[in-house]
Image 1: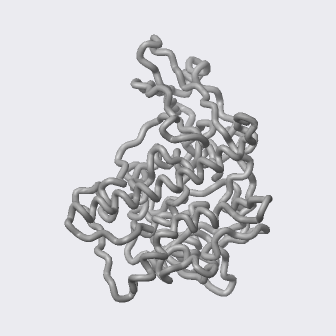
Image 2: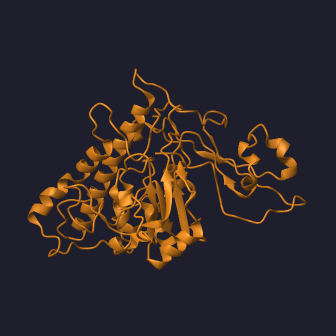
Length: 382
């Protein structure tokens, strides 16, 4: 999983240098007992060199994507052998007391709060935090006083780009885009925007036009979407591959045994978390489903369908506006080898761990919801 680029923000009209203050907000944690010293220390993390959607195990040719996907769907096989999905209606979840936009989620999966605590890319989530800072310090600095704060905030190297001065910069090392999204893209904060693009940074956009893309999204009624993908490497999911003869596609044929229902992921109601585009309403639901301590986002793409209805009609791939996945590693040289293990292996293990944890949480909270309503829960949760 690649990091969110450090410079993101809305377009705006450059302000005059006269009399206008340039406001920088700097987040720091001050720990009680340390005389208000800033203690955002760098955690020892495992970073691996090739966190991409498709990870190849060179020893036997079996992909992590395949192994974990089949772990995710194994429970479905028993269900489908005894249940005809065309004839049995599974009760829909709707919780009016959930936060606005998250009514379709079981209450136990909703994470309404977040924090600025840094998370590692490897290891156990429960062991990420050795301390929990209790105080927050921000600096509001006018342009004429920038020298006073230089010791706390160094000038950004992004300033060499013309667009950089119109962007909001949040720069924190060794975090993923979902860590950023949970903390800085709250639905109320981004409610002025019709669509929210949450993309990796290793995507070629030579064949992509954002305005034309949004026109197609609106034309085909997509609430959650992504551009079609072209890549020199084999794609992890057939759903994401660009169809050159279509504007949009909403379903595909996967490998044998991968789809137990043609209207469910990964054959439909599915896009990848690599280059996802959310409508304002869809993001309001998805944000609440993003777990605060799970930073890689693995498994989230298979659960996006819970936030729109009907999902197989409102989730799709825009083929006429397509991108190229360059698969450029962004974390490889940032980590440390632990006990002789290569740095990237720790992150790969964390990705797999998070996928299992997310799946378990979703299954358990959904089951709890049905039981609270005195409804017999489905045999499995996808």
